[in-house]
Image (cartoon, rainbow, N blue to C red; front, top):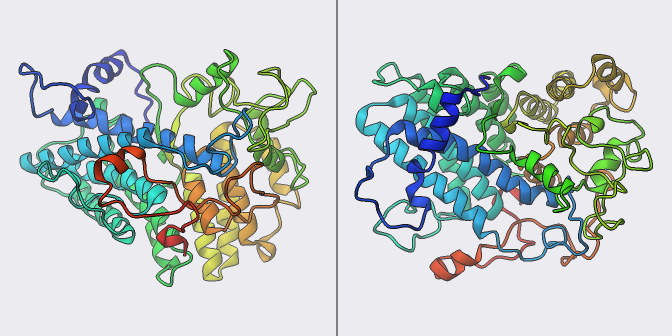
Length: 468
């Protein structure tokens, strides 16, 4: 993964990012500005906002899976209130509109690599919409002549995602492209076509793994996709270039400045500090700092903080932590995730040996990624709670370790729902407004006002199509 930190790239980002996103701004057209943004401008915008959208979605789902907790009692997301996420909906659609234009323009000029990368990014953004809301406008969403686009069925949206990935791979592999990707304009992979292909297969495996409750679940197909996906941490899809602070670093900085943000959930902290599983996880000190009591304590979701502010009575994201330090990467997809998907697929296939190997690989990859000392990593892997041997490997262990390794990633909410929230000691939040765990989001208020006639009627307890 190239880090893309040069002044040239920063200038490119700040200068091209917003000219490529005119559709996301409610302003009049500028007669002196090109009405067709260049491919490279769209590429900068699409790669940047794809990573940012992973963060935006995670800033919702991290509370639902109890990675994070609101420092205030009765927090809306913590307690399953019907919350308006219009801003996130808009960001996803704004980026998808730019990606749609990128794909269309690439097709006109024979830029197969740009079209292929665009289709992979479209699948990533569309998948997040589908996972949060189920049925969404897609098939007619980018037709300027349709003001109120109909909703595409939820399972059909999923099928579109898989089709986009298949088509994207074909175009990335095509021999007859007129233009190669410009490394300075690709903020995820620096123009590395092979990395885009690996990412397409990784996302394909992720999507196929969502179907564990369906008769169409195919472990063999998942493992086949992973054969073409990531093989080391160096393959990870991540972004390291930001306009100012990286988002989770901004949360940590905000918290220091008493704009309370980035508070860790008691469930997550207890899963790592030895309270829940009887083993201390050496990744915890690389995420947060100890409290003033010299230990690690989280905030109970829905209950709010114990102290009056950031007085170190509870744990928050640290400005020194891997995920929230200055310049911390935004992770879109990782090798560790691929190994845990492989572990689950192999386990469901009945191959415990392969499942256990992939499980250990996933833990190792994540610990290496965030900088755990080798001796501490090996001690953790040898602990009988973790290193159980292939004969004793279980789905519970695989998903428990994946939960930790996927910290702050939105796909964990998909895992939680597939798993029916059966993580050990995972409880409903205090003051929960539902009597059972949340299964989906309410449609945004902006969509209700603009396209309400087409919007399905749903409840927060309704299961997304692959969750039933």
